[in-house]
Image (cartoon, rainbow, N blue to C red; front, side, top):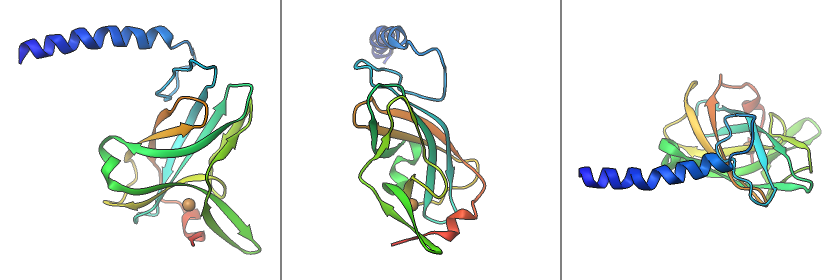
Length: 172
Ligand SMILES: [Cu+2]
């Protein structure tokens, strides 16, 4: 057993040095993946989760595109200990027609070149469904965001107070 541990340390150390060597972003955020070989680089900040306490939740995050070309949020997934507890993850938009608003799935969302996309209440969000057991205030989720051009970014998002806004919208 001891030999295996030493061997693993020997493998892990150069890999860690390599990671720190290419991490050239000086703004240290909760942003996990900072590797941007192609120049495409999306930064994720202000991640939060809201859940009404049942089997659904919304993830909100601000995405900043540092590239000269538009990029797209194409999917998201849950990592970590909650990975097996979220049945479905979709990107949603809120569509308002008159007095009613509903959510619908979208394929991808544009993050403008050198610009920002805010996933927020009443707008785009990452929808978690079939969450079992339900999320409670203070729980932490590890959310991996996948982009068309930039490398994936993993953020940690804490579940906030149950939002009233969640009840106003319905799924169709
Ligand atoms: Cu939704």
